[in-house]
Length: 110
Length: 115
Image (cartoon, rainbow over all chains, first blue to last red; front, top):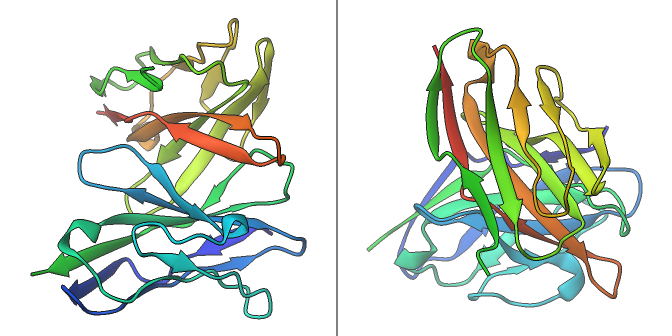
């Protein structure tokens, strides 16, 4: 079965500390992986996708097929990074459906 | 562009009542979706549409109906509201880029409580 697991409901760090939000997936094929973010009182929006291999707002995520993981990392957290983060999987490169994890709330304290 | 617009933002229903959650997009996206988000859970797909006149069930379609008469609108209908349908509902639309990948745009959500 296709599944996305985010083991942490809440992650709290201080400003300037490194952040790693964990995401593991189960899928037998070649998935496309995404991170979505929802800031307070805003709608869900795409943060980054693994095929782009880009860094957005200082965040990066590397797809590790051996460990079936797509952890989101940032070396120095900022207060404005506080938000809800969702990892999502698209079962193949040409399908339009997303499977979401349960989300991790990141709190960055000053 | 307004993007994806959902109405209402909040609603309280009594058990057995019916209502329609509205969703409209002005980006000419072919694909539209309805998700629900329960506390502590991820978003689960209710229904989706790949174009006007075409709809299909997602993971949790029971108790819901949809229609897609135009590209812009994708309303979600609850016929007999039940407490289990208390949730936050998100509408989304997506497009396929030249690389065959999909870009999603989400609405701001509708918080529904059934009492």
